[in-house]
Image (cartoon, rainbow, N blue to C red; front, side):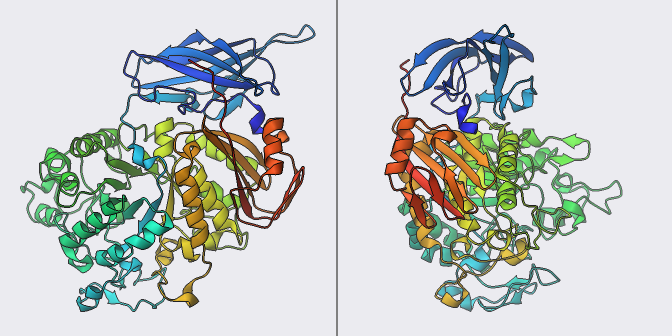
Length: 623
């Protein structure tokens, strides 16, 4: 089992200085369980200016809990310092010594790629308030209507709908259906969100456009009057801040709408200041757009004028909404993976770093996240996006593990008719592989989403009970858990467009599965635990229907066992817990459990379900 192996994860338990300066030494620690074996020597292998270096570790001894600690120091020569541990185990009966490499993807009895090495960086980490935060995503048109919304006249592009009108997931009306939700409606529900345990309200775009999703902005100067205008955003942010909550906006840095004032001037006049904001052909008769959708012309980040208008100027798009009177707490950058990329041109990292610099100049306590729909490891190193909105390391493997094989949904644009069902071993391998390039701060700032406005709903993908299992894992794993509005009511949808369902306020007949009490309980546990906010993360088991891990800190630890089917005879000691810890498990009632609870000396439980126990903190050697 995974819990019986040497462990390091980049957290403060193992790396005291999470943001060293260049040319600083950085102390690194490793734990080796007695059940695994005895190491005779340990080295840290770091990569300095592209060349491997080895620093031998000192054994700090056994703290009496079955673990032996080792410590070494490496020099942080580069902004991203790569390292792994090399562990020597003495051979017996005349056999030669054995050597293992421990990197961010796991333990290996062979050499491995540097790509999967642990990372310490000099990048500015995400703000501390994000460490145990819970994010709630709001699609404004479908969340809530205020009293003022009924007086607004629908624009020409819109197809007005009642709150009960079924959402069309495909066809000509997908972007035209207009339900009239507004920002004052969100403000009216701030108390509800606070009661649910929400810390961050993430709004999809609030700029005017010619669609219900508003990713086709016609201006970045004002809040859409259909949402209540600029004052409505000011009121919402003030209401959230008064309860200690944050508000993040959604910004399309890759494209605008074709009705945008910049694009209209650029298209009309090749000599206009905005002409080089976009990619026009030599004849100025055609232009590049997002995936060939002509209503979404692509922005050219090689343009100095665009950079000033969008980022560096005093009243730039990025800056305006972070300053008074709006005071947003950060941005999620739409299609961050495509921004600054077109064919042979790739200035993506440069643009991301430019945006981060400006954001942190204005608000050093702001959060900047980038959408990276696939593998985010190569792009997100903390020097641009501080974390990622990605589906590769959490969402997709969760869908696959908890898949209802009869489900027919859009599986992230793949040609599959739905997620293929996999075992827990595959989930762990996938998660490790696609998280391994993240530093610990980036990993903690990366979004753990069950689903979003761009995907099918987990309730339409997973077996009954599966969405709650996935929600609990999103809350307990490193990262920012994401609740898409309606998840707490079990809402359904087979693709992103059909998932944007109006909220069932005061409509019990539209509530599919009321999970509000569970979300609140999980939020309370997450907020109260130092093991989540500051602790380490160690996998214990990944076996068929069982995923288990432990969040560890000197103050307390949380053991999490998730099952997708009934299990019998699962032994805590076999997962790598000590005899003392196993005894606590047998004697204690879990602080959270989502299915019928039965326990004896072995763990027997009905699934799907999640069980969480609070344990004593771990013993850490003195400096």
